[in-house]
Length: 250
Length: 76
Ligand SMILES: NC(=O)c1ccc[n+]([C@@H]2O[C@H](COP(=O)([O-])OP(=O)(O)OC[C@H]3O[C@@H](n4cnc5c(N)ncnc54)[C@H](OP(=O)(O)O)[C@@H]3O)[C@@H](O)[C@H]2O)c1
Picture 1: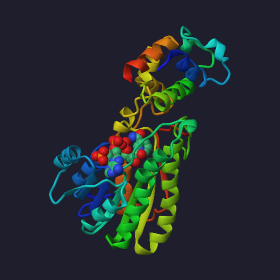
Picture 2 (picture 1 turned 90 degrees about the vertical axis):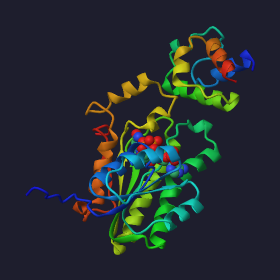
Picture 3 (picture 1 turned 180 degrees about the horizontal axis):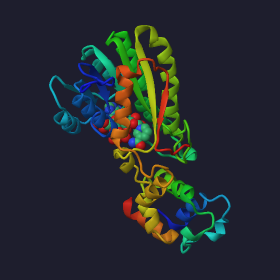
Picture 4 (picture 1 turned 180 degrees about the vertical axis):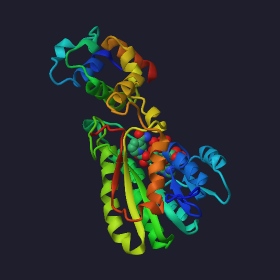
């Protein structure tokens, strides 16, 4: 039975946003190792190129786009061929206390984390870019879905909204053979962590102790679950928010 | 920027500690009410009022309110 693999992605074409770093980069590389043609996108040319160079196999494509702007989303969608899977992952973290919220900042976070996921999905569907069957995976968070954190209101709300949207998309797109699921992940060691300079290394170490499995996640922990959701092994799964958090919210 | 105004802005972030307890020489980490939440409030206040982005490590490095004032001043 060597070669038997119900989780195979062989021959699929998959679009990955936020592929210049962290979870998106890891997912793109892991998919390429499984015989996927990946289309990777992000804003930063050099970092996206680094991901591109790390891809295995042939036939991949990279596209620079800022997904916080709807015209760029539309152009991005127009420039790609048909896909079998979409990893809707680009996002930014943000920490602020309620008393200090600013409207422009709320809008910026929601545009990047939430509106982009709705509009990317919209244009991909409208322009008939999905093969039948297809699978979409949205990266949400445990933040404010399962646990609330001080300073996490705007980011958490932007991610809760993704889960809410995902369920409706799952319902509406099921007849087209497009499955939609999300991942609620706990803290994963990526730039998203180190970019937050308000939290000290000691505070992160302290926080890690709240994870029963004794560590934060690695990008692979999320990428491999995304691969499952992209594969035909999850053919009967749609509308599900999958929590992966090292036991943090038990 | 002015020290007395800075002290008042810091004191504003506390709910239970009387403003009179917070002076230039107060070792704010030792105040009963001081917590990671208050630390975040002070960082947000500094961002708002002085357009300076403090790091968690800046908060740790300062002992007195005046130390913090000097850190903020050096970043303006
Ligand atoms: N790490 C965690 O602990 C964690 C936990 C829960 C959920 N998540 C979610 O997982 C996703 C990936 O996070 P990560 O940890 O891998 O973060 P990361 O290392 O900071 O990577 C974020 C990616 O998103 C891209 N991006 C951000 N804004 C963009 C924009 N306006 N247009 C296009 N691309 C943009 C970035 O690329 P450019 O800068 O090159 O544009 C980068 O490739 C995010 O949605 C995040 O909210 C992460």
